[in-house]
Length: 84
Image 1 (cartoon, rainbow, N blue to C red):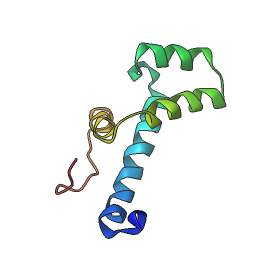
Image 2 (tube, rainbow, N blue to C red):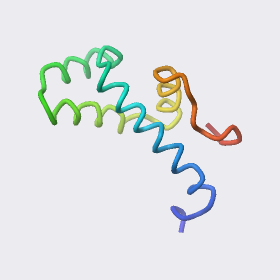
Image 3 (tube, rainbow, N blue to C red):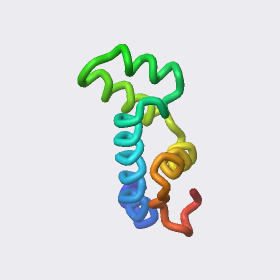
Image 4 (cartoon, rainbow, N blue to C red):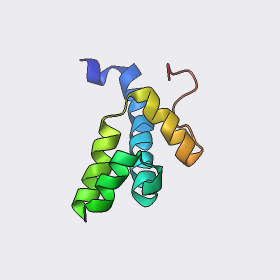
């Protein structure tokens, strides 16, 4: 199965780090969100703020998410030999 292939499993941990880091950074620093998403977050409350950030992150391509994670956190958890 594709999801258990060693090349996919090797990237699972780093990918989770990227998604978690993005969520934390954008939740604590909503000014980093694009205007539309920031406005949506500012007009929401509680769980809907988290949902807004989660939806924004979920819509990112892999490459964009990795670049944004690096921009917001200063780190890149992806293996140097990965295609990203």
